[in-house]
Length: 344
Image (cartoon, rainbow, N blue to C red; front, top):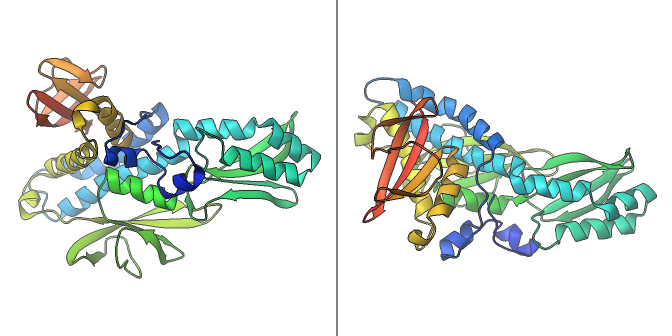
């Protein structure tokens, strides 16, 4: 998960270091963890299914691109639910002596103060925290439009004294992450009505696979179901660009690889100057795609860690018992960025 702003109010407006990327600032990045990588492999299975179809992808090229965007969007969401910082913030909440003690004593004012301190603590990234006990909501502090809630019990000396709902991301922040990592127009809907996004004007209603017009251009809609805070659902509608006629003449595997490559280049474009952020780029690509990424300068690997001894510019490479499809490009003389996508 990527963060920039320190104050909760600012975090609710732009809760990611992707804003720092856009501004050319140095960012601290947490790479993909083992759980997220596992979810990426599972999610990528559906995106790779159409890739095995021989011959031109044709009409299936649109859904192939949409499936790639869906995997990336779900990985961003999974990072908000299960990422390293989320787990750390859960630990801050469940080990807060002021909060637990206040709940055990039934001191509502002290609970309110403890929750306020947790949400506004320096270096932590809780955008909303709701605490309940048997009598109902005791405290609820944070922004109004929140995505990806996480719940848990609060225990004091072996006794459950309450429960919490927390989140490290708001709807605006998720839209910004999607825009900066995937690049597709996006709109979030709640109860069937547009809530916020980048589509102006937003379609009044969207359906999965529907074709909509955005700024005079046709897009295929991909609708993903996600959770709202504290309960309920959100529909995240991605507007997927239709493939070109040339793309449709390629195999689905080639269309899929190009779609991942498009995301990789889009992420790279956020780093200015890129030459100062190769390690950051690799971390973001791994977190966004769930795949392996590397950067080389000549024959020397400068970012990405362990991998194949030799990396071809195109085609497949064997590593860790699998064959990986390679997408690469050269952002500057002598430098090449590689993305190894799911086994073909």
